[in-house]
Each structure stands twice: as C-alpha cells, then as structure tokens.
Amino acid sequence: MKFEYAPAPESTAIVDIKPEYELFIDGKFVASKSGKKFETINPANEKVLSRVTQASAADVDRAVKAATEAYRKTWSKLSGAQRGKYLFRIARILQERAREFAVLESMDNGKPIRETRDTDIPLAAAHFFYHAGWADKLDYAGLGDNPKPHGVVGQIIPWNFPMLMLAWKVAPALATGNTVVLKPAETTPLTALLFAEVCQQADLPKGVVNILTGDGLTGAAIVNHPGINKIAFTGSTEVGKIIAKSVAGTKKALTLELGGKGANIIFEDAPIDETVEGIINGIYFNQGHVCCAGSRLLVQENIKDELLEKLKRRMSLIRVGDPLDKNTDLGAINSAAQLMKIREMAESGDAEGAERWSPQCNLPEKGFWFPPTFFTGVSQAHRIAREEIFGPVLSVITFRTPSEAIEKANNTPYGLSAGIWTDKGSRILWSAQQLKAGVIWANTFNKFDPASPFGGYKESGWGREGGRHGLAAYLKGDFS
Ligand code: NAI
Ligand code: MG
Image 1 (cartoon, protein in one colour):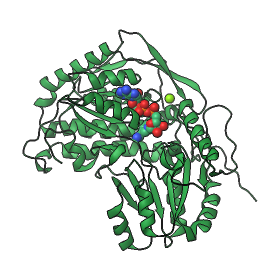
Image 2: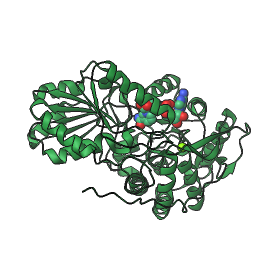
Image 3: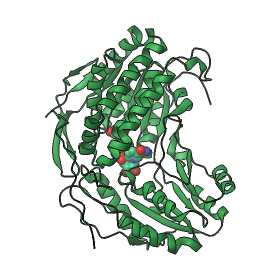
Image 4: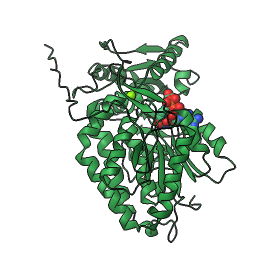
C-alpha cells in the first residue's frame, strides 16, 4: 500500500512583494535615471513577481559616490566594536524575519522552502553573527597590526543562493570596515531588496550598503568603475575570466568564486546507506545549482551495482514539485535559460553514448523542471564528465584502485570540492592530501560553516571566503 502525502503548502501571506522596486543608494530607494525595468518571475509557475530596475552606469556612479562618502565620513571613523554592533543587529533581524526571507527566496528562486528555511537563511544569519564577532578582533586575526580595509568594494552575486551569497559577501566586507556596492543576479533580486530594508531597520549608516539590480551590463559597470578598490564575484568561469581581464593592470583587488565539477569518491568499504544519502545531498540539493556539487560520482567498480540499485530506490523517493510545499525535495530549475543548458548537456550525454536514468516523476506543466537524473557508462572524455551542468544530473564513473580514483578526480580544469566515503581514517587523510580541491568532505557532503574557508583551485577561482582566510580578502596586504 502506498501512502500519499497531503499537500503542505507554506503560506505566502508573510511576504509583501511590491509591484516595482527602485535602487537602494545612500540609504534610500531611488529611481534610476534610465527608467528601465525588467521582470523577475517565479520559476515554478512563470508568474511575474515584480518589476525591478536596470541600473545604468550613471546609477553605478551614484552608488559608488555614496559608498565613498559613507566610507570617508562615517564607516571608517567607527571602531570595530561599533561596526560589530550593526552586524549583530542585522543578524538578529534576519533571524526574526527568517520565515519571510525563506518564503520570498523560494518564490523568486524556485528552491524548496525546506532548504531556504533550514539552510539558506539560517546560514546567512550565521555569517553575520560570525563576522560581527570578528569586527573588534581584527588585530588578533594574524593579519598584521591594525589591518586596513580596501574602501569601497563591488560585489556581484549569482542566483543559486541569492541571500546566502549576499551574506558571504556583505558580512566580511562590513566587519573589516569596507563599504559596499552589491548587484544580485537578474533572476533573483528580491531577497537583496528585502535586505536593503533590513539595513534601514538596523539603522545602518546611509551609503554603507548600496544595492543595484541589473544584468551583466550593470555588473560590468561596477567592475570597471575607478572608485571601486576591490571586486568580489561569484558566478560562471566565463564571466570570471572577463572580470579578471578587466581588473588586470588596475589597482583593484579581486576574488573569484567560479564553477566546479566535484568528485564524490566512493570506496568499497564505504558505509553504503549513509553514502547514498551523501550522494543525494551532493547532487540533488538545490536542484544541483551548486558550484561545489558532487556532480561526478567515482565509485569503486566492485560495489557499483549494489550502490546504484540503492541509489535508484532512494531517488524514486525524491519529491519534485511546488517549492513552497514543505514536503518538496527538488524544486524548479531557476530559469528557462538554465533549463535549456541542462537539457542540452544531458542530450550530449545521450549522443556520446552514456546511459540516462531518472525515476518516474510527474512534472508540473507550468514552470521549469528537470527530474533527478544520473548517467552511467560515462567516460572521462564525455562532456558530461568534464563540463559543469549546474542541474540535477550526476555522471557515474568507475575506478579500480585508490590511485586511479585520485587521478580521475583531479583530471578536471576545476578544483572546488571533493567528497571521500570510506571506513578508513588513513584513506581519508591519504586521499585528502592528493586531491586538488579547495574543500574536501569526508563521509559527508555540502556542509557549510561560516568559520570554514571556501574557495577553489585552477578554473574554480581565486581567494577564499569565510573563516579567517576570508577576512584577508577584504583587507589590504599580501597574506598569501
Ligand atoms: P553569470 O556568471 O553570467 O552570472 C553571475 C552574475 O554575474 C550575475 O549577477 C550576472 O548578472 C553577472 N554578470 C554577467 N555578466 C557580467 C559581466 N560581464 N561583468 C560583471 N558581471 C556580470 O552566470 P549565469 O549566466 O547566470 O550562469 C551560467 C553558468 O554559470 C551556470 O550554468 C553555471 O554553470 C555557472 N554558475 C556558477 C555559479 C557558482 O556558484 N559558481 C553561480 C551561477 C552560475
Ligand atoms: Mg525570479
């Protein structure tokens, strides 16, 4: 007998989405001189949520001026303890308004409410708490006496963890004494605009945080503005390379957090049921829109059949559908463009001879959906083994010996994350030492903590975010 779940939708009554939004500059919402607006939709039903402003180069200039004034006149005059007070306030307001943020994020992004409620928003608040604690202790961070901020920083974030990426960027910048001009991604601007209201509620001095909505043109105007001293970017490797070129030869500091093709390595002695949960979390969390996703499953050949059988059974239990339903595991793909990219990559897997498997699932008619999927028969040369798919698609590759596993895991232009599943501590240490990845998880996956630095090697980017290492990126000096 099969028990059906009753629908358990989260109410949207808690959010108050305005029909239109302006730009947040110098502590106020102001109109753009360009007057251009664009829509943001709910990718689960394609309904328009609101219209936001396309910030022009002139708006970027206004925001940089406001951030410069705020830096000179107020923010740089405050002690670390005083800055910390504002960060603590913001952290507490985020906790108080957590449900509102969680619902809004789920609507604008398409990710399940279970994840925004339990992961994105609590972690965003945790980043502010963590960095509030550092604000008055920078002299003891091992980064020199009285380390100095850059001044005005430009921050450009993606759509996969909109509010969490904002927190990763804004919290360390403010704790170290910088002021900020931030641009959220075009498909997910609403939680950043709600955060602007939080800045007002916290009485943050005007101009310390400025939020400009817009597309890549707005992003490029931020990157190229001479009044900005540091750029922090999270997004595609392609745009990361453009930004690196624009910044080269200027005095701007730069951190880049780019793509990945993480290997999740399963040795024959791994605890199999826990491992299956780790694989699910590694690739189907957040629809696979995760730079550090475990998108390549490297499994020791002799346990492949047993593991895949269990994985199939577990994948059949993944509930795909309404992101606001509390029982949903896999929500909507963030945009039509991303869905096209995922489909195209999966079709290349079919064409190159890999074998596709998905559980039976009924996808909603409206909106952008892709079922949880894996491919077997994948070789190292296939595109689905080499390129980031950024969707709920896993490529299964086998190995026979531990050294072969390491060789295959490292055979990628990326180097962001890796997972190791084994019963042996010595094998964890041996593998971790040889894997070229910024973050390595052992017998777990996708665990995040503000105290732990995050970042990549090679085409996955430069610099670290979070922890003591992440502070260094917002202070002047060579800490490498
Ligand atoms: P993207 O790199 O174009 O977008 C990220 C951010 O950069 C957005 O805010 C965008 O407006 C901005 N941007 C775009 N062009 C810019 C430019 N020339 N100068 C400054 N800012 C610019 O990523 P997109 O197109 O949304 O996604 C494409 C692929 O990138 C995905 O399929 C995925 O593989 C990867 N990606 C990786 C992310 C990560 O977390 N590392 C996040 C988002 C995408
Ligand atoms: Mg949206």
